[in-house]
Length: 146
Image (cartoon, rainbow, N blue to C red; front, side, top):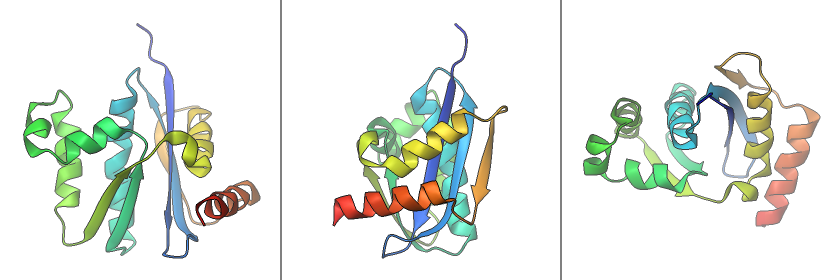
């Protein structure tokens, strides 16, 4: 079976919903769970490296959240290596809350995932400044949750 292209996107926001840093990625894989799991260590490491110590991590793959929060499931899982790297990051001295949500409820992550999928090569990209499209989507997303 030929691999399909999967994109992922994340933004790290402050307590007011303002974007502090963002990222997007591209994976060549047929497995959305694996693609989400592969992007998670990069996003968590980015948050750690930027000094954020109280983080809410919204994940649109409920199965990933379920596995990560069950140490026994991590050890039995076929993606043990990447899942264990996520667990090691979560074990650092910080407060990380994992939330699962439906992908359609976060237009920013969806936009960035499409951006990642449109990249030519697999990888992980970080941006510190927002383009107008992302600023608009962040505002729209923030208004929908107020």
